[in-house]
Amino acid sequence: MAPDKIKIPFSQISTTPQRYCLDSLGIETEKESFGLQGTVSLSCSLKKKSATRILLQATMRATLLLSCDRCLQVYPNKVDSNFRLICEVNISEHWKLKDIDLSACDLDIVQLVEPVVDLEEIVRQQLYLSLPQRQLCNENCKGICPECGVDMNIDPCHCRGDRQTSPFAVLGVLQKK
Image 1 (cartoon, rainbow, N blue to C red):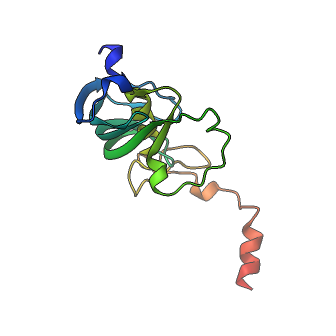
Image 2: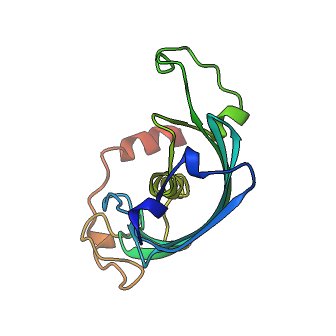
């Protein structure tokens, strides 16, 4: 894909919606957070609202590779999201220094340093926003044994009887009284 298709200057966007379809968008991610299985598919329209504002409406599809919080196994997580953003270049030089009271509508505004819509960066941000709070390979994941480290989804743990009593077991006795 040509780099000029990922970064679109405001001057090339008109007041009538322009469609962009990027089916093989490769996004660089921090491997600690997630990986990608394949590429990202993005279908979007850009429309100039004013000289400093662009409306972006998009549908994004991707398959993220996440690490389960319980068993640490990597599993695929499909993302199919629709989003609407306003890309805005702030004319004021001191916009970063202002106290800003944000409403719910303002959360959909992306502040840009220069009048260029960087689709790759917007997709990267939307992928991070699509991450689930709890990353579980399935709701019934048993996790790993804290003693021997065996994945209890695959093999049963044989050290359950050998566990030493918790230092907090005394609190359990006190709670029963």
